[in-house]
Image 1 (tube, rainbow over the protein chains, first blue to last red):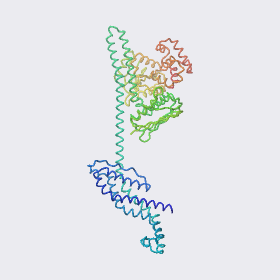
Image 2: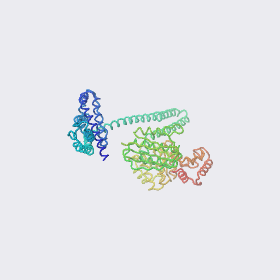
Image 3: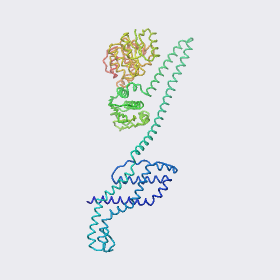
Image 4: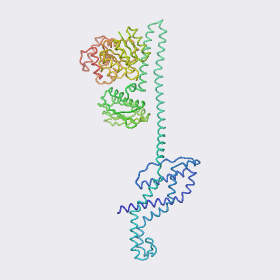
Length: 406
Length: 212
């Protein structure tokens, strides 16, 4: 019983408070509305107030609400935007409702809270002001009236408090929520807008990293392969000239030329491998990683599930992450076992490399203890992925990488 | 000696054909895909074939698979597989189908004409030839036991893995054959390998030790 009454009191306070706001709005709103048409911050304020109402109503009902649709930004002369702004429209309508219902709500709220106590007071203290206090509308000027109507009003008041207040308050709150909830279409539009923002940002990042990669390849080919081919052509040219006069020298030069050609071939193979390892093209990601595992000095075990369609850039990144991790493990970890796991969790490709070595790896080490982890992070972030490193001293070490495929 | 060449790049194919003809080989056929390869081997019964790993239609590892298929249907058919890049996994697959008369070389080695021809002759004679780069990949992997070897012994081990005999190793390292024999003995002792094997079985033993 006590809990019931308490809930009723809370409901009464809720209604009273909201009613007071509504009444205040009645006074202030006309000005705000006029200003609001021309002065965007005023409309923003109104929308925010409406949102506050919605939050409080939701909190009262104990209902979770989705975040509000964002306020449309506009300049003060763009009045037409105001009329199209549905959030603003809803806010105004709610405000109107509050204004209309304000005074009645105050009345009801007060009634809920006050009926029983007032009856009790009137019943007891009426002699101080005979005919003043009323019980159910009847002025009290005799103990008879006091003692019959008093308890009656108290009962009514308690009933109202216990059984009437809560439904009324809930109905009021639900009305507010219904009026203020953004339509599903609006929510979808807001979600799409946010997604477009995110995609624009990540696309800019991807274009940047693509550019950096192209520049690196151009540099490698220009400084390495092209320079060697030029030197090669020169040596062949000189050899040709020496052919008649000094055949031995010509033969030596041609030998040098061939050495140079082989060096160029080796470097070119290196560049190609760093761009996109050929085995990745031939055997796919699972096959290429299994070759890496087979090649690792430390026994490595690969578990992989169906990976679906994985873009080439993601495959390359995953391959390089595993390759670099295995190199680190062989160099630094003193491990006896490596576990490689690859799977597809929704839109992401997940690669986890765990070893039972001595741990203590850190991203960004250089020199002797260089682990190339910083480069891995860079490569992974360039395609919008994420890398986690867990490497307590004493091990075990885990490198986990998540790469979005869509 | 009769050779069948399988290579889809026309320039390279013609170059190899020329090289082989100049060296006295009889180029029975130059074909450009796996099916034609299998047919040509049936038709010409060559002493050795030279196959590119990457062939149409998918340009992944058709050549490798065709080489393995040919060796299954004609066991012992000498095949020299060459590729733009070497992968330990491919070497393992090739050797799993029998190691007599098998070679796996990087395409770039073709530029070292004498060595290429030598490798071809060794494969035709039933030996095993592995590209030095595959061997070095293997040696990197098995780092710790190899630490017991001296640098010279490691060199000898690598050359053995590539398929060279003692005389050839002596030539390559510019030492006497006796010195090579001594190094080989040391290597086998330090790695706990049964001595006394020679030729193609020795290569197998070495490769097995290196984990292929």
